[in-house]
Amino acid sequence: MASVQLPSIDLSLKDTKYVAAELKTACQQWGFFTVKNHGIPIEDISKVFEISDEFFNSPLEEKKKFMFKGGRLHSGYTGHFGEKLDVEHQRRGDMKESYDLAGFPHPDANTNSPVIQKYFIELKAFQRECHCLSLKILDLIAIGFGFPSDFFSKNHSSSEDILRLLKYSVPEGVERQKDDEDAGAHSDYGSITLLFQKDAGGLQIRPPQSYNVADWLRVSVDENSVIVNIADMLQFWTSGRLKSTVHRVRLDEDVKTRQTIAYFVTPDPETLLAPVFEKEREKQSEGKEDNMETVTAGEWIEGRLNITYGYGEAPRGYLDSQNGLIGQSS
Ligand SMILES: O=C(O)CCC(=O)C(=O)O
Ligand SMILES: [Fe+2]
Image (tube, rainbow, N blue to C red; front, side, top):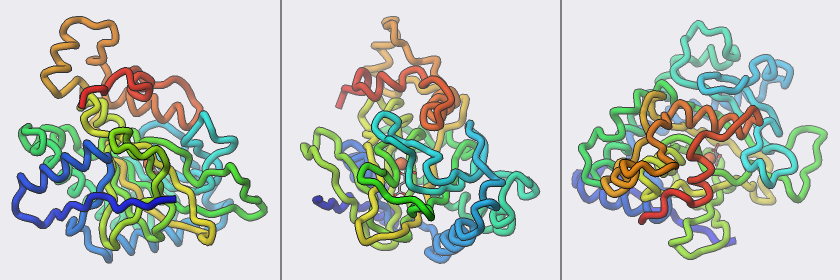
């Protein structure tokens, strides 16, 4: 399988217009890029990987006491096969475990595992750093399109963001089958996602058609860079100009386990995902039937979670965007 070196954006460069233009191109062509000199100290990232290790190494019975119960603002553990990211094609769920930390949970919240509670200060500081980085990136995206810099970031208080610890491994007593997925093919739900890899190798992307490569590509990333991808809401919001690229995880054959940290950035729930560009706004005001202007970020995310965890219906507009019925403009 071919590998791809994602566009790399240096956030320490002083020429904001240049950086914003590079970022815009990356978002339009790939929907994936990496950022370097991003401002999050390596030690802080390593610490969260240590915490993650400690949690996932605790006994299964212990982890199960803090199961993720679904919905937008819950935190908790999801065991092997508990999430099926590609509902249509996967026979069983993803070969992974995860722990979600939604929003900025209260330190006394006894709903979290004791390991998570023990490191609450470190985790909260890391969430803050991720939030700051996400605002910087959202500002640059806005500048790239000629909007005021806070055009997107003003709707991102981080209250709906999710920090997710991930561990990929084959559970004891289970045989890996040929068609098993470590994380099934999917696109992310929110505005952007930050991804930190401790153990590289495994992330694959299906590049947008415009790039003319049909197959999956292995992602190769410089050490110390953070991977960033555009997610569905930002694709929808920008009428498809920014690409929410489908990706999956397949561990290389010689790899037994892999750890990553994802930070899912989500607009505040009351945010109306109305088209940001004049052309599409005009179309809407003509009163088309599939008028989306009443879809809020909160409704959207709830619906998406319902699909992956098998609870209920898709959000309005979601299936259209997946089937290419919206977001055709370039
Ligand atoms: O762990 C990875 O490399 C990707 C994780 C991912 O795509 C997700 O959790 O949405
Ligand atoms: Fe993802």
